[in-house]
Image (tube, rainbow, N blue to C red):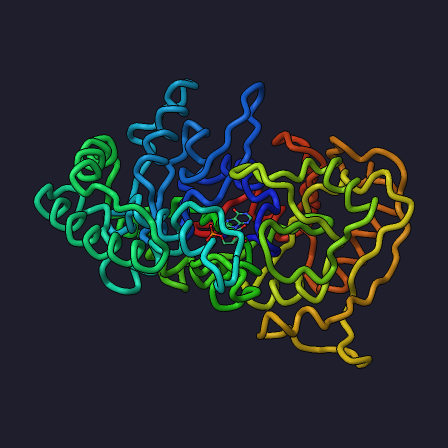
Length: 436
Ligand code: IMP
């Protein structure tokens, strides 16, 4: 399994795309088209939001698990983009019957709520993710399976619209949306999507029984987890490894290992705590060199230094066996690299990660400044080629986290990567186990 160890955008897309070569299945288990993986394959550059990047590998099958919230329009658009680029989607993509469907009113409610006076502005991606999960947990959601029944779909949309229009009109003064038109649109979208619908949990379990390697692909990151992240500045799903079992329908005993992806520094999109945020010239440099602009929304990302207390927290929550460090090359020009090694609260060392958003503001990060290497590492493919200071930076991170570093990424291309010889990842790489 691959999870994000920060606030998302760690570069999971590239890592999963690289590892996909060794796997028969790649499955998403949470989130929706709020995620955005940029994958560079040769001359082509894809932004995949819903479909796992395994779809780009001919021998690999891509699955969207029950824990995902699916926007049918976004899914159809993505299928068409891939098909236009010559990627074979039919027979390679499987969408769970049990996945929840995002409807236009989810976005309508979210936009209105985000901008309502007195509400905490989360800075969401406005894709309707939160309201769709609300309806799921409220047991009034629509699932992919329901799309197969036109009468049920019509009744669902009419009932939901009566309720949502009343709420949005009364609370936010939003204009009513027409249920009839929505039904027609969704009826048409259903025709496009249903050929891909399947019992994904069953397929994955059968594949695991047959010894086929499965890679579960997390979206967003640990600190955006609904329970363990920087609440309320989080997404509405369980992004951590535990969420994968529920969202894919695979038992915990099936999980072979957990890979955690972190950048060599830190970024965050949207509001919320970010103790090691860097707003000065170094921050601008990281943003420019790292091209830190959202792949879904185009928003400039907030940038900062690697935060080891939060990385250790992510390692603990996910049970990360091996850390995969991306974008090392972005640090190439720095003379000195601050790393957050702890926090102080009211003048005393703070041991715990705060539960209340307001307490984060009072934390003062403690930095250890590591020497930079000042030479290009971009595109390097062998550990021994890295400058000494770069290797020492990575050794420092691994020692502070008590976890190995299994892979270092030095550029966006698949082959701009170093798999650390002798690491657990290296061993999996050479003989992928049945579930990871
Ligand atoms: P939502 O998931 O659209 O509800 O947004 C909730 C929070 O998660 C916002 O701060 C978003 O910026 C953030 N977020 C959601 N998806 C991603 C992602 O794929 N990468 C980075 N941040 C994300």
